Length: 286
Image (cartoon, rainbow, N blue to C red; front, side, top):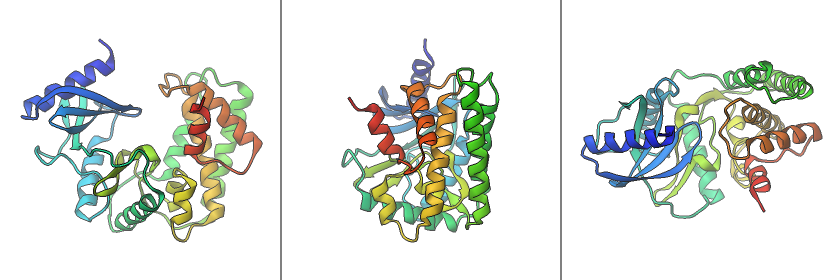
């Protein structure tokens, strides 16, 4: 039995024990967590190995943000809002929304992200700083055991670029606040209630441009008062960090090595820095 099969079995069994009929599960995506639509109860379940998640942080923050009127996906209201464990998996249950459009319209996306940031400024929640993510990427790059296929020259180059970008961004001294951390299109839902953000386990403190570095260009153009120089540095930083993840041993991202090679090429080539959605379309196209 594969890990995905076991995770699905754990989620459906748990839902049934909570009087949420779950005869079937549809895999919505599988990245840092497995995301499932359980039917016929229509619940959005997020599943990860116990100890490999920060689910309690995510649940607590989601409740506070929803209470503050922020555009986040709410927890499933038919059960107690908490982290459930079953067969070695941590499971959280959320409201499922049928997508209204395949892609989130830029105007709604930008407005929702601005509303999220405004609400997050009112929340005092202990959270990591964005630089912790840089440190994690640097550790992957620096350790050949964790990134054995990364050539030595690329290891030196990528490690140096991560360090220099960290210094450059910190030297700007920009205002920092609580952020989503990864508000890319895969983490925003287009619903009848407007754009709603999911996957709050990546929340961290940093400049808003760090969040904006994850979203499409059309969204950035509609977001007020953006520091373009800082945004460019954050976009380059995100490319460098994602490059590190793609070279990590055991990375499950589809076509991960191809992405890793292309990201290194982009870093060497220089600006303009593409947005992640542009890069993904380019590499996943025919």
